[in-house]
Structures are given as structure tokens and as C-alpha cells.
Image 1 (cartoon, rainbow, N blue to C red):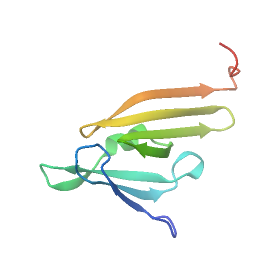
Image 2: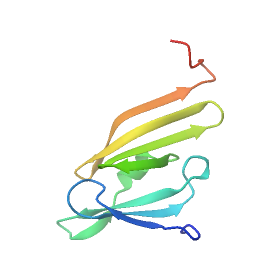
Image 3: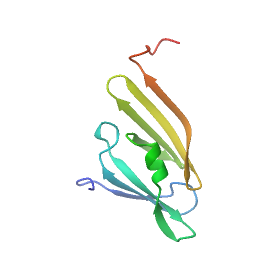
Image 4: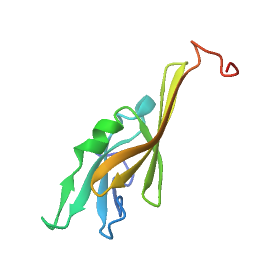
Length: 113
């Protein structure tokens, strides 16, 4: 289930706790077939990488744009009208949405207040 000819594993500190975590490119379930990931955070008590399903639930059908200083930027588009973005940061091992925007340009023109 890994991407053909691409880097599929990324080691980086996703939650800024000083330990490397793991992102694995698993499929093309992001927005419009973009890559999707499974996230493993280092658990200091268990001394192991543990799958974090909470972030996967928050970003289902979203595409990862970037990770900068522990902040994740995701986006999605559904058809010609619906689109949105999410900014997420980990609080320990719990992902928190910092900001979110969703727009449906078919029900309201972008220039309307």
C-alpha cells in the first residue's frame, strides 16, 4: 500500500516533544486522490511509536499541505463548490484544531458579506 517510487516514511518531531515521530504514506485517500498518512507518535512511557488515530479522524478526506514547527496545514475540496482548510497542532499527543474554514461558493458568492 505504499506509493510507487516515492518516499513513504518520514521521521520528524510532529508534536514538539523532542522525540522523532513517524508519518507513513499509506494510500491516496486525501482530497482528490492526494496522499494520506498514518501517524505514529513516540510514547515515552512505552518507549515505542504508537498510532495516533485521533488526528486521522480529524483529517479524513483532507490533504496535508505542510508541517511547520509542529503545526499541520490541511485542505480539502469537494466538487466545484465546497472547500476548506484546517490548522492542527498537537497538545501532547492530542491533536487540536487551531483554526478551520469551510466555504460553499455555490450557495453564496465569495464577494457577498
